[in-house]
Image 1 (cartoon, one colour):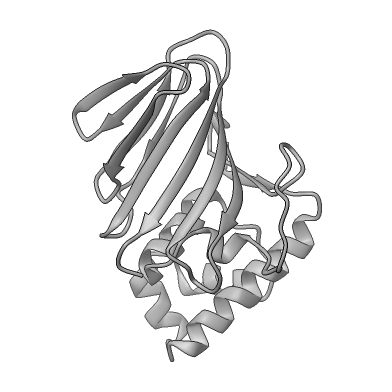
Image 2: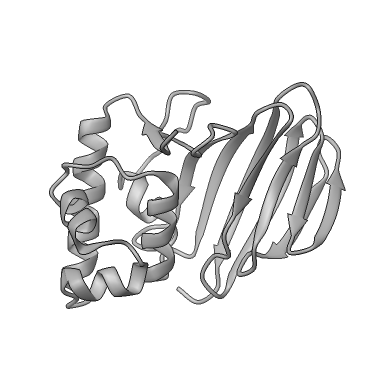
Length: 193
């Protein structure tokens, strides 16, 4: 199964992500080939994203954000003065196996240095995340359930309302060992943005 995103209006969001990506690329004076080399995403795919012709998956969005050293919400969240983030009403990005649903909530203006997300981890599932760009620190709080956080080879067991902080520029993952879903709250700080 391919990774996918699900938003109220996927076409609108695809156009927004594409316009934002094109704006960042032009601002940095990068060609599509330069951007492809930075992100490890083909220039054909990047071109389709910029034109709003493709809905990028969570993996592709992370590759682009990491390659550009920006928070993923810089690509996903519309710029507004006042923002309310209600559960299940915002944007959603699904992992390939649909084990994790990520809801971007807030980010600082521009390509800010902080973003927050809500995440819903399916029962008896694991989401493996690649290393993020250098300088990314994740703070995770378990809002419902019990979750094991893997940072490289170490596993940390968290109960409801427990929190963890770690440098996310290494391979990590989120494991739900329970037969019920888990809810996580992420704060991601980009110290080198």
